[in-house]
Length: 551
Image 1 (cartoon, rainbow, N blue to C red):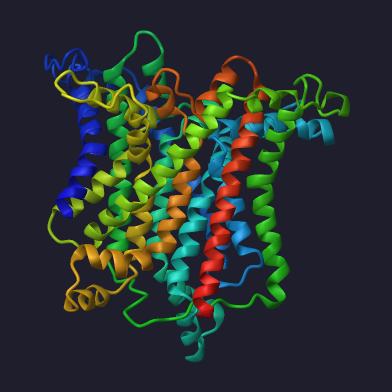
Image 2: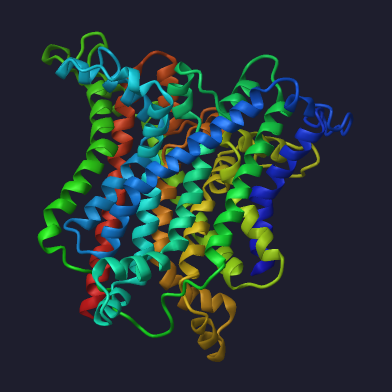
């Protein structure tokens, strides 16, 4: 099982990363694999201080986004995991919506809401555009896009801890706050650290929000600098590769810090003994907790979603929010039989489903090897699995092109729709791996020992023992993978074969053509379809859990 998992990681991630590194070292590598003039483009580090300023800005932005995600995601995730929050499954679906909305669409929605003449100004006369187009505004919008990562990881992590440890502490004389601080919170550290690592990685590689908002503030980050090198003439593949190496170094350093936090002490919260999930009743805190969830949902979901819907319904942008300017005409091209929009919806739908299933299966196997395996190979696999978050999707797409378009390959997936599946899985694989690793570190090794004593192979142990226990975290990660894959943009633009359209490429093309309302209409339909699927999955899980308890 280990060689197969290692081979998959090397094929999906290692080979594209290797080609990027070769391009960074050998400037002419893309031209037939030339190894001439090694390291001759490293002068990009010293020719001016632009790259170093971009690296500093990237770290600063990621740090503040992490703080914002902790402020929004930690309390809501803890409450969701420890308490009986009314409508908990519904809140889960609501907080998944930011992942369904493409970041550049969310940024445009906030621009249309807060800028002078925007929707807020039209309704109240308040102009907050000066706050939006600042470093704080960029961090704010990115926080709203990423805080669900902390919410889901923390809520599932404390579910594993359950309320029984806190109850035992209170029986021993500890108050609720003391039991939480000394018992529940420390045992949840692996889940918190894993989610913050992903937030950090996504913050430094996010392109849409900085491109839409930071450009107006002069706040340049590494990923926008890399995009400029790849898009502006003359194209500088080597300079972009060097910038990507810096991003990889930053995320690997964060990975090392997260791994140190997660492994320096034991966080086992579940052994072979069965234990029921105990959640506390909110009592008099019911309405304050619902108010907290409502406020977070309002600023993170309702406002940007309302702006998207409003824009899709306006006949003209200049007409503003007036009854006479409302129109459904921008939805007509999307529902036309055989339209490009309908094809894009179907293509993105099945690609997202297959990507979520593949990433979940691979993630479970890799997580078991990383946590339960021995030897140096598991550390290499763990580091390799986080690399897609260390590389901007556009650069990883370039690595995929370089790797799969090599002349020495007898068969290639390049130019087929399968290359999108390869790229999606490579980009999104860190989600299930990080979530599953955090969950496995809370499971005692006695479960594995009991399975081996009973004659189970490692594959059988994973399938019948560990996979069911990892299921809550894995399903949460797979839902995130599905939501993100359904609107993926950058890899789709770079790799989609001729005639193949996805939701992301369709919306992007509409904005390029000036059809903002049609692009927003497509976003509304995609969000509604994806949200409905996620809601159905959550309801099915709820019924399954209720049936298991009654049985």
